[in-house]
Image (cartoon, rainbow, N blue to C red; front, side, top):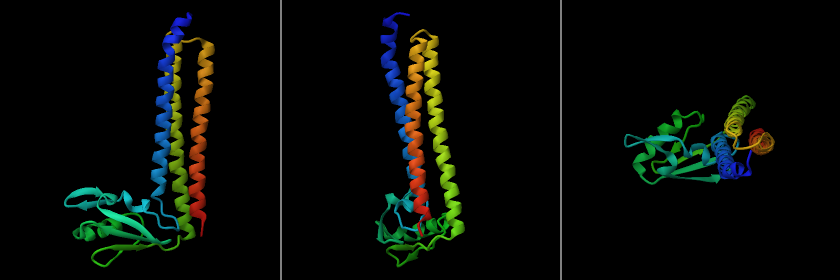
Length: 196
């Protein structure tokens, strides 16, 4: 095979790796956002930011219609920019799976988080592990797609067998980097949930 063919393939291979890495980063970001909504013993605005509120007939994320702050470690304060949204926000929180009841003064809502029971803690850890495994599967699927592209290029004589093996090793390194990141995110969330 000529060197020229390999040189022509290099930009395409670089683009494939770049795309795969972007997709893996996106999988990690998605996992982090997903896990941020899990209630631990501490208040965190991410728990309710993405909660959909029926705002004038339109499902709207809570973060788009209210300021969410943490005045105390176990308390969230929700201040809607439009006071008339308070009942809709209250209803959305009650219907959510957070298991909390907001207290309203007509202008703001306060959510005080009770400590997690051991049973609820174990259930949440199971959910975290399930979500983390979904993240690992997403990363392995990206790896599979990338390897398929590289093998097709080798089949089309755009790279040698040796080059394919070298690129496959790079794919494995990239995959390990991001599956290790999933493990790190999972372990951090586990530790957070185990805090009493």
